[in-house]
Length: 477
Image 1: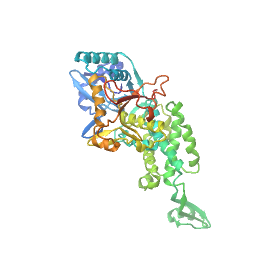
Image 2: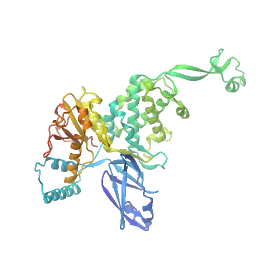
Image 3: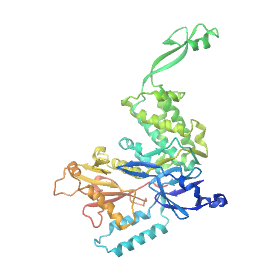
Image 4: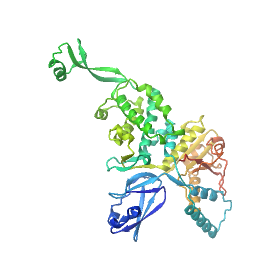
């Protein structure tokens, strides 16, 4: 039985000593007392000495409170209950952030701040402003830029050792995530040209010998059958039908089958049919009969660096379907526990938007994840006379004081000496700062939300000097 919740909310479960007495329709609100000790939230990562759990829990009296963080995915809560965190954001928090940052009064009293916090909390709890973020559309944008795509290694956590969880195919985020990554890597490989190499071929030749004779097979196939003019040989050929390409072709066929039966993920801007059609001709003459065990012993050429990542993702896709292509059309599927880091996803989405809206600039102009003394700046833009410290805030707060803590954090980055040295700022100059945050799509705002460097700093935050904000619309389902 699953517990389905959204990002960054608290969900209460009542504790009971006899779960069997609860009506079936109400079981999702209850948890056995004996199961509480078995709840062990998974740690997604550790950065700068701080652990980041995928979710947390707190036992209070006769209830346990589950708190989802900014990771979306699926995992076991207990041995027989799982938790599914969906990518749904409350955009009322965005409105609260915009209201607080637009406030021009610099000396708000404690009573005014308290009133602001109460009104913001009431608005967030009363309004149903949750919208489901289209994670696949974000990934499509990210994977469209090679400089951004290579930063996706730490975006996904999968536990292949844990037992799988059964869900509906339409609730699955892991498979389309892996398929998009694989198809994009395969497109890059096709664009560069398939790798050619020496590979072994076995053939029953007539009236000739080539390479070495396979004695055992020669006896079975020819000697016992009185075919004395035939010889089973093994020899090397230089070409594209190598083990690596055969493996990629096998995974590609799985992906095509999956795309044909799950097109709900890939409609409109997410349509990747053109990518599939671009790849298909290059693999027409490649066999898909490959021994998966041979992949473990491959050596990779640094010139064809995409192969290593593509084969890694390909192995995950095959493992995901238990090497059975018929599972791509099942209504219910079993998936290993997995988690996606949404703040990281938002950073990379903004990175891709930067590159898309500024085609004359390079990835080096944006200095993604510029690190110094335990601090990590999301972007340090250095492009001609435009020099900006940028912080991408997916985790917005609604508390007035916390909102201003976030604003002061990015302002503090601009005071670091190494940042000033990198941007070549003199002592009497101030570095402009920019906070980029997610917002819902609104009509006629495409030009306003452009991330072109020339007009990116148009909205200054009320009570701060040279600190700006810019909302970026996320794709919504």
